[in-house]
Image (cartoon, rainbow, N blue to C red):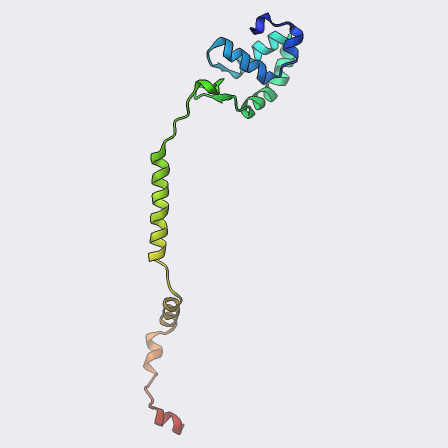
Length: 143
């Protein structure tokens, strides 16, 4: 049954999103938010003031309802009329780059021994080395 043929009592029982679904299905074309809601307000006999105060909530209800899709031209349509294009190349590339990053991280990992050597090297200046001398064990025991 078309919306125009439905009695007002029956139309009033439907939610805004249900009315939107029926409008889009009957019109077989996408529509922008103000146009759809204006038609709904006309069907329900709402004033321009009602339109102004309720359109924000109406828009929110459209964004939540999974039956609708917002197109690039800012018009709403029934999701069933549109296919979703999955681009696997981008996902595959990102997975590969993550694996490459992990491999690079493993190659660049510093062991604890390497860190200790670096700290020791960093702490010793060449000037400090000038004052040092090699002492044998015998000489050390004498002292």
